Amino acid sequence: MGKTLAEKILSDKSGGSRKAGDIAISSVDLAFVQDTTGPLTIRAFKEAGFCELANHEKTVLFLDHAAPSPNWQLSNDHMFMRSFARETGCILSDVGEGVCHQVVAEKLARPGDVIVGADSHTVTAGGLGAFATGMGSSDVAVAFALGKTWFRVPETIFIELAGKFSKGVYAKDLILHLIGKIGADGATYKALEFGGSGVTKMAVTDRLTIANMAVEAGAKVGLFPSDEMTYEYLRSLGREKDYKPLSPDKDAVYGERLSIDLASLEPTVSQPHTVDNTALARELKGINVDQVVIGTCTNGRLEDLELAASILKGRRRHSRTRLIIGPASPKVLREGVKKGYIDTLLAAGAIILPPGCGPCLGLHQGALGDDEVCLSTANRNFKGRMGNPKGNIYLASTATAAASAITGKITDPREVL
Amino acid sequence: MLKGKAFKFGDNISTDHIVPGRLAHLRSNLPELAKHVLEDADPDFAGKVKPGDFVVGGSNFGLGSSREHAPLVIKMAGVSAVLAKSVARIFFRNAINRGLPVLICDTDKIKDGDELEVDMAGGKIKNLTRGKEITFKPIPEFMLNILNEGGLVPYITKYGDFKA
Ligand code: SF4
View 1 (cartoon, helix red, strand yellow):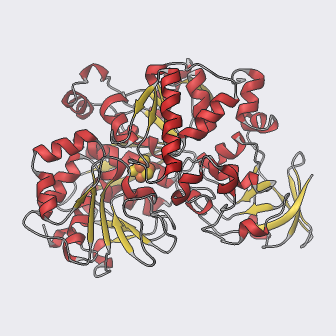
View 2 (spheres, protein in one colour):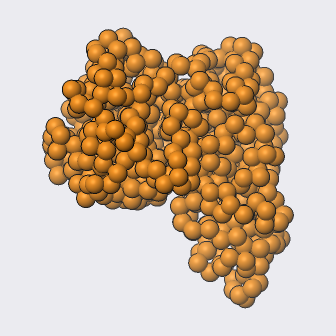
View 3 (cartoon, helix red, strand yellow):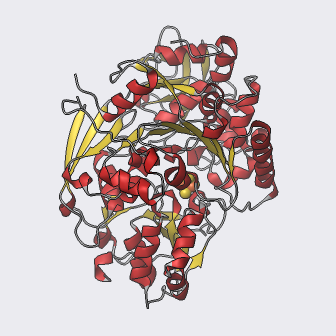
């Protein structure tokens, strides 16, 4: 019987043939934490009596959520994590060195890897064909020490994509549409696997955006095959040696199948306070926006800066609307500077943040006031997410965000393109 | 036998409702963080809950982030189990890893303030207020072994590895 991508990877990493429903004790290729989950992970590691890491070169501590730190408590957490890195010799990605998921995609994730991170958006690396999933601090502490973890091999929902996006429609619109369709728990405990002719020519950066939000449908992983586009992406980073092709078996058994024609999609927006509360951008036309955020691990890549700059070139943000740009990594920021995108965005009235999570989690750098409306390219709009339970968060593509910054209202980007 | 009062919440209670990101600076000060448990769903919850009580959710309880602080502060508040129609994957695993039982059952049969009695081994919940019995889905065996040791750290400390 053929295997899905999830079954293939977990069979490979657990040393035996596994199918959906089996328990797999799997080796872990990469384990990481970030600054809001790391301290608890380190405490669990020590509490369990561990001193050594299974593989210090494949253990990473990211200081990205509070970067730079807004208060002394988080600064102390950073110090605690830095000292653990010194003690164990693991990799430290310090303040300013980027959002964990972007750095993992740029430097660390390989097709076919099993990756666990104490951050739910660890699923992002599924865009590169890695079985990557978020776990809590105790699970990651054990993965740090033993270099393995356990999984229940997930059933898979196969999402067959066909056709091409029409003008003004992007990968973000696809994933918001899909979550709206299957619901915030539509894939709980399952894998989402993407395939079909619409995937063959899809850039890895788009795949990362889609995989990033798989968890917003409850999924354990969001998996893409590893193919020519994957090779191109790794090659562009000087990492062609990390490439390996990966595809599901032709006779793989899927729990469910869904088909989406990319050409049928329109700019889509998630409304407060759940990601599956979706509508079309044109249906929400006219809602005033106080703050636009372009960035985060979902849409903080060079392609996003490029797209935002192309829309905002020669234009200005609406006087009522703050425009916050958060490049996801120093590489993104530097290339954005080199290519002139940052200058264009500054001329349009944007605020540029240091590489990191920025306001996404509500810690700093753009907390909302009472009843304020934010349109963000992030992945979550839960109540309280951006620092205030009285704030209202809408989620959309970078194009919709840039268009809305110009008009000060939720705007279908096709109106300004 | 677990016994206590039900605190009823709606569907889609996220980890941001349970421990909002704006309080991340308290994550290394758990007693202080625990004072805010479920604050964005019910600001008075922390003041009302008593040891032994139950958190009762609707569907997709605990969706969102991987922060293990979410089940941890619920447990620190003295809650003996979380009951829900369905529960998000990471929250489920984290709760078990911290020794907090999560029971999947029909929570429509429970109203806020009901007195409940849970028979873990028998797989039954008695709603004492309404005189109804509710069954819950058995916890998968692999996770039950972890729960029975009080969580993942005690489990690993005891066995040194996963028991296949
Ligand atoms: S950018 Fe937002 S969603 Fe992504 S890792 Fe940071 S806080 Fe989490």
